[in-house]
Amino acid sequence: MAQSTVPSAQVQELPVPLRVPVREILPWAVLAAVLGLLLLYFVGAEQGATSLFSGTWVHEFTHDGRHLLGFPCH
Image (tube, rainbow, N blue to C red; front, top):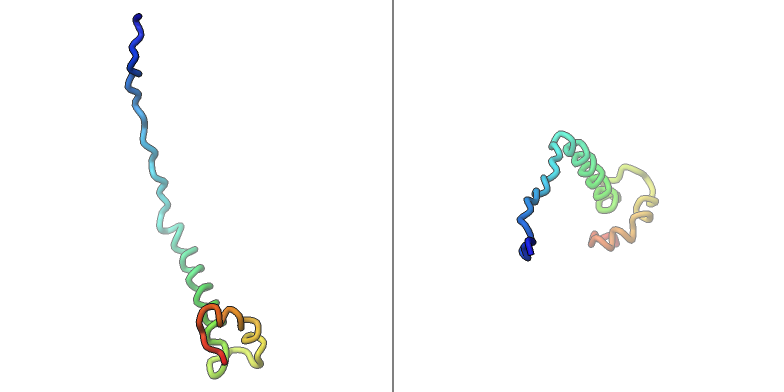
């Protein structure tokens, strides 16, 4: 029997991590932050003295989200 019972050592290459440059991520991160702050404003502060729109339609539209996030509105 010329064959060995121990398998020959195979060289396995480790996977190279994917590198994403910060310059590609930064615009999307800024956009996500601006949209998040805008959403937070409309859900949390769009009523009373700081309101941008007259009437209560924004308050009524975001009413359940306001309670879900713990903002007082009553």
